[in-house]
Image (cartoon, rainbow, N blue to C red):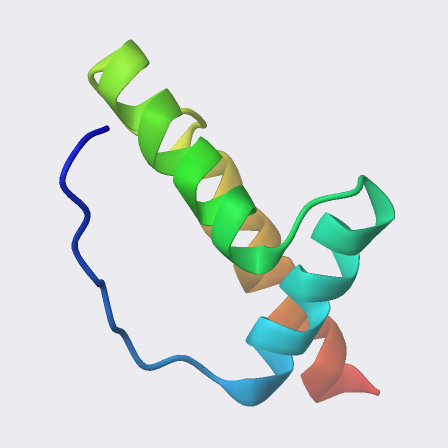
Length: 68
């Protein structure tokens, strides 16, 4: 078995809760979901999604919140 290490990071409590909820819907824990993401980063040798798309969606969400 591979040696394990603990990774610790700080995030918004809402982000953690919402991500946990999504992972639970597909039968994963938050930890398992993050491990899958890290494995995808290694496999792809890149972030496994387009950052531009994420940035555009985030900007649109912020604009929508401001106008509400």
